[in-house]
Length: 135
Image (cartoon, rainbow, N blue to C red; front, side, top):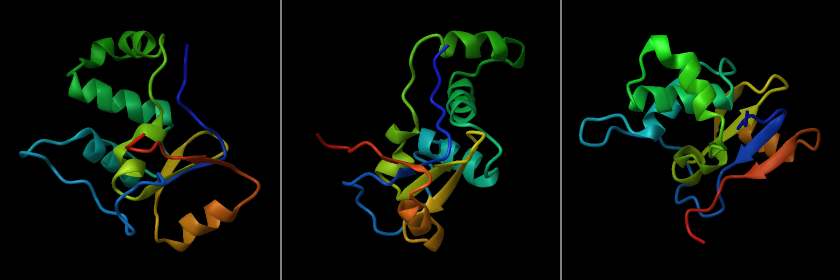
């Protein structure tokens, strides 16, 4: 089974992120986007969910998977590789860094925050860049 989880890692804002100050993703045509759903899960519950949890919860909500089928659908979903949070619009477009603690639980940090800057200088954790939007 594949995983998107990282441990003791900061996913830094992508180099080509268009904002200098983090923005909260907004509804599009009255609907929650993937970025809105990821933001609400992580920001509303810091260090409560792993990357796998966030990615699957969003997938399950978007695809209206019933509670009864969640476990089997999760196993099927992670039976093949899935994009990790490095590809999330939160790091690519909205200016949020994502920190994973030793248990793989994630929290968001605004690019302009002192906490984000502290993580970026911390040599004891792994540093990854968010994926660029343009090649």
